[in-house]
Image (cartoon, rainbow, N blue to C red; front, side, top):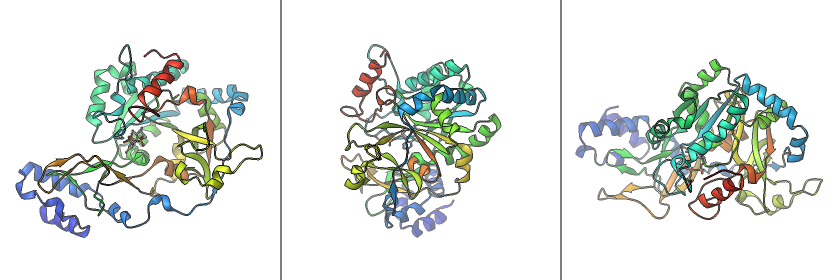
Length: 408
Ligand code: UTP
């Protein structure tokens, strides 16, 4: 794209200010800026004026979860089915590690964080160790696909290399990058984060399937015979990955997707819960839960919206391919965005100063027809690290790891 094309493209979206420093840049920087302008999808900016994706009209009803008691009755049966699927190479794992981890406040990828006390225990290492439990039990390598973003790809890949993939077979680890989205001020003007660079951020965890596809990895999965993907977040250091019992239950029930869930500790717990929305499986955020919904009970007198998601899902690839052409709704989130001020100095704001655009994995679930909420024991499978201190912090996760016999 040349300068005039870029200027015209920007004019259509009211973003000509992005060329403000063009004349002061070196030829290489100019080319870099023009390429970024060419590659950036500005159409999402129009969403700022429209209603947010979360404001859609909806009819919420309860969804039935498979409880611990039901699971334990059929544990052997489910585990056999899951183990067979692993042996047959039908299961892959997808680690979502493209996020910025801003709440943790580290400048490195979250997975590089060392949570050890007497020895180094990195978050990525914990994840590989968790996966190894199943790999060792089934004597089968499971392909692991790791989503990074432009911001953390180089750090992540070299970290794995330096640590020899924590003993995992490197031919079974595949990295792929997610897309970036521009970040704007409250008037919808995209910030510059350098004179030759638009401010961008990873475009949320909803685009993982599209990004896998773009990287040619879905074709690879077809060749390998992978049919199901266990998708999980980077920050739950206690989760079970490729859990045969969970896999078996989801396959046995012919579901499009399975979701690991935990029972809420109290009605006001700040966790998204599973429900049906307009007849489709969905997740309702805690701040969307009205008093009516909160007080609804099942025929047994249990709260009807009581199972929180922990970002550990098993998706059937075939089902995802059927909805691949549908567009995910865009969520506009207020965030702190580093930017160049009028004098060209980089400012790191202390308060939110604009919008980022994200798609979310929970919207992918809403597009599918059926989902199995599969209950797990919170104290054994859920130790998320979101914050430095307090709730869902390094400290709370360490306590849970020690309770589960893991040496730190
Ligand atoms: P979070 O919603 O906790 O976001 O991500 P985050 O970026 O890690 O942390 P904060 O909010 O900035 O503190 C849940 C999971 O989704 C992944 C994260 O890496 C994490 O595993 N994620 C999130 C992506 O892979 N890409 C994204 O664009 C956002």
